[in-house]
Amino acid sequence: MTQTATKVLTSSQLLTPTSEHTRGRMKFFDFVKAYGFIIPENGGPDIHIAGRVLSDAGFIRCPPGTPIEVWFNTDRKGRVAVKVAPLGEE
Image 1 (cartoon, rainbow, N blue to C red):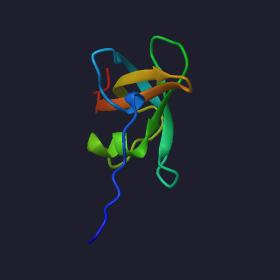
Image 2: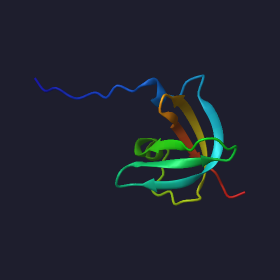
Image 3: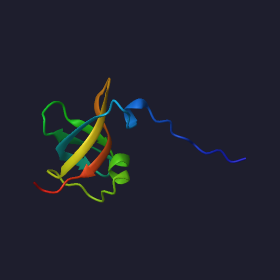
Image 4: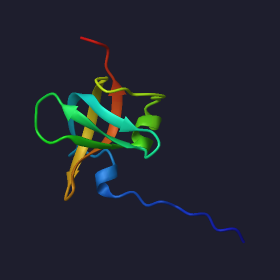
């Protein structure tokens, strides 16, 4: 019998009714390490973003300054992006 690994997502990784929403700009993203940060336009701490969240949204690249719409949860480590969408230049 073949076993497959299943990753269990924590509540900070899921879009929920309590998820917050804001706009911001990409601070940086390291595709090799598969993580980065978003600077929210309304201030506050940066939002951590995992590579999975960017790839799920269809991003192939995301240079610093890219405008982004982001939904995030806050856990004991801080703000964590669970969904993003591209924004056009305003």
